[in-house]
Structures are given as C-alpha cells and as structure tokens.
Image (tube, rainbow, N blue to C red):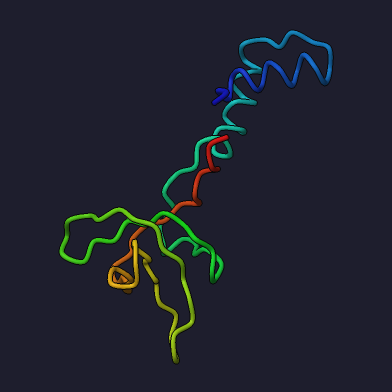
Amino acid sequence: MISPEQLSRTIFRETYGLDATDDAVAVAAKILAPHLRPEWIPVGERLPELGERVLIIDAPYGEPIYGSARRERFRDRIVWIEEGVGARTAGTRTAVTHWMPLPPLPE
C-alpha cells in the first residue's frame, strides 16, 4: 500500500508539476492518512449503514472479540448479525464497541 507521504509527493508532481517541500508533504499526508489507513470507529460516534458488512470489536465479557458483522433490523430493533461458516455459527452481538469498513479484497 502506498504511504500518505508517497501519495502526497505523487499528487504534487503529477498534478502540479512541482517537487513539494517536506512541510507541504507533511500537511497533505496528514489530510490523506485517515482515508488510507482505516481506523476503528466508536459506535457512539458513528454507525455503519444497515446491511453494510464491517469489522467489529465485541466485548461482551470485557475481553474483545474481533469479527465481521452487519447491522440489520430484527423485529422492533436494530441488531448486529455476525455470520460464521454455516448457519450454526450465525448469531447476534450485543456489546459492539467499535467498527471499521472492510478492507478491499486482494487482487
């Protein structure tokens, strides 16, 4: 994966035909970094769209469990549905603390 600094230098060079100063690259890299390196998002800050599959941290007993899940409407409430391999391992998660978008599939 390209670093924010490399991307910043490339943008300056290919878009503007300039060799950027280190200070300009640092500022641009700081702006680009969150978009290149997804970070865990607290559920109290923002939630994914319903049906969007995401990575989650679930801490039902204090110890974090990592997995993937999606939020769905179930009866009269919204729940996190974790799908495993086969129907036996599907279930709901109740103590999701953080989530992040899934990374792109490998090429």
